Length: 66
Image 1: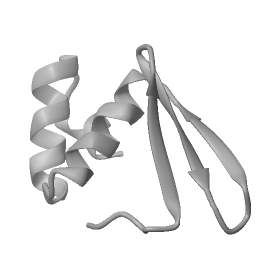
Image 2 (image 1 turned 90 degrees about the vertical axis):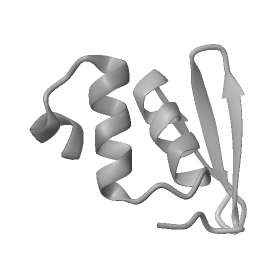
Image 3 (image 1 turned 120 degrees about the horizontal axis):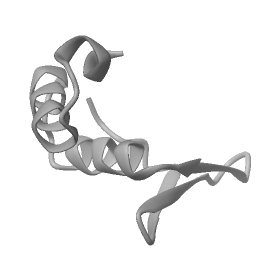
């Protein structure tokens, strides 16, 4: 997984916002979404992201994968 250079990410408290620069669309992320984005930035693959989310948010792997 990799992040497009056309997207800007900024933390705002527990959540974050993403701005897609070509379209100027803004997306708001909750705490879980913000953490997933940070894990993608760190270069984790899907299995690594699922494992981190399961551990950090105390949810089951199936839910984390969705």
